[in-house]
Image (cartoon, rainbow over all chains, first blue to last red; front, side, top):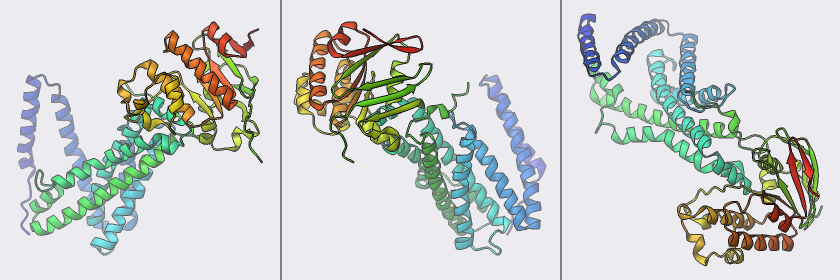
Length: 267
Length: 203
């Protein structure tokens, strides 16, 4: 495999183009000049750090280090899911439900894919486990965050509708059913669209990276298909688990709608 | 245990918000009117009876204790009709538990009202249809929250005549929140008024 390594001065050329973009947007008063610079700097720092961590992890390859890394990734994703909701469940439930949903669906799919489909030896080989889990968690996070945000937003706005349905003797599952289905659907839509557009509208990033890294396109394509399927399954089940648990938490043992369990919108 | 066909609604030391506990038994076919300034807690009181928000106290219907059954079954029998009704499907008929031809014609609706689009209903139509919708689910007791607030005089007269007929036929205990003194005199046998933090029987 002939991979052209990139020197830091070569990256500096790319960075100067980002600087040019920031400069132009400052002149045009778009108010994104500073955010571009900060985000660019974060990319460099975060990716360099994760590169160091991965190098160390690959060198060691011990199960408990892989597990620690996976747990950290999960917790960060859980925090991000919470941060993306406008009206979130209070008392740690937003974090708890988001994280458990990602754990249940993301980890199950990753382990299943590693053990049954790819089959590296040992199954937790970090070169396979960490990138796979990373892509899965990243997308499951989007699905879970979107669907939970949709659910809590709908309940916040439409509480009168849900309560009126309760007044007519409907069970809580019936009363919130439409919103629950809608929320689950919205968590799955991004991946359905991505699968439909893959290869035509966009060349998926993982595949592109693999080809740039020297893999034959046929191999890269097979990995990409595998990854898209696992991501779809992970984010789909993740959204379903999160919305089910979240909507249950919005009602108490007397099937009352408890909007007081949601926080008010942040300003 | 046979369930009573015409049960009374028994409220025991129910308190919600700042209101002091009240004991109140509404006989089958009796209408008890409730009034008070806006924000005094009348609607919250009805919501508490329907078990829609946390509160203190016990409620039973005949020999059925509320705490002994799932909440949605209780609300199906002790039905709250809110001042402002909500509609979630496209057409009126999709919200009904069963056909209500007599009620519809009694309140001046034509037969095709069930196929009407909800988006085109006026507030008065919505209010009357919400009451019909509630009765289509065959409740055993009613909690009415200002059921005629959006109606003109003629519609109010039709509504009172119709609902009192239904209440008498089905021997339903009814709590009716209102603010029009004349209406309370027409429809209610008793009248409680909220004064500050407690209920007063109006003589």
